[in-house]
Length: 440
Image 1 (cartoon, rainbow, N blue to C red):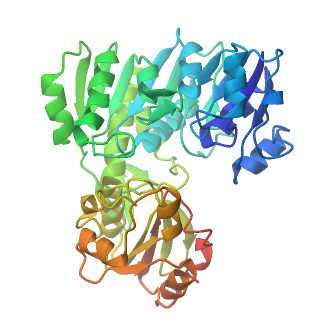
Image 2 (image 1 turned 30 degrees about the vertical axis):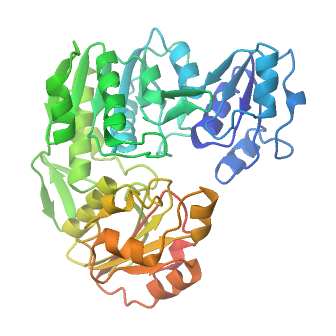
């Protein structure tokens, strides 16, 4: 087939393009492509010759178009494809179309999706079980974040609740029709498209009704529990919780297995992954043996730099629930001072009406820092927020707030990192701050 990607530079889109190029003719375009997408597309000879959109790329030789979320409704290539009646798919639509006969496992929830998906993938690979997958981060041992074959009978999918594309407002996870699903919890997010908490919860309600066989759910999440009490789903509900574990010499021990990941939230993630693997006939002993070699997904409590007296961690945390869980994990694991820095970068986090959701989220850290760039607020057409708004929202008495990355860097580097850990949390990059240089 001849497949054209509109907005090929996206995290999933470029991985999908690389995968499909092995057995198809693939082309693509985008008006902005950042690293690591740029280098990876170049490596596979898929990088567009120039940035921008060109309707002339849409010819009668193209069999279908895969449309990324970044492309707008008036995109000239999209308009041309519609004019020529070329089939147009969002990436979840394309996955769904080509996995109809597979055993589908979808990992959903407001947090932990990437980590649980990664854990399951790691265990299956170590057990030499063949499977297809889509995950939202780079994982050790996997060249690509996406694989779709004709022969594999199982597919593991990270089930994002965000919209499928600019012309399809359906949440991505509504496309997959899972046999088995995991829901980690429900905490309001993506307020640009889900204007109220009730609207957000409704997406999970619909998703639960689509599950064919089994739902594995975190039983200590009240929002989720309340939803399941009213659910008309015919799926079997399997609860999981936080397993008992020990921390010995900064290492986490679970059922005798020494782990490379840590934190309450990761123990919950492991328990969910274990329940999925049990359905796939993997026994507990084999699971624990495999998971003990799992080092985590990229930017999920990732160790960036380590010295004798300090460790620098990077995490994708940007929503309130993720912020709390990540700070709690690092604080409880190490008997050290914790400097925690978070970037307000997403539409939700920069929205004045949402800021109060972050109340007391940083309270477990010893020194709390918030960074934001006013230009991001302007580019998202949001109401202006200032340092006082952020200070009041977080309710942290000595909150340090910066809107200049150079001043942020200078402030962090002024600390003595003896017996001190640094945690940098963002879905962005602190305006290209080289965080590896923050501790010596």
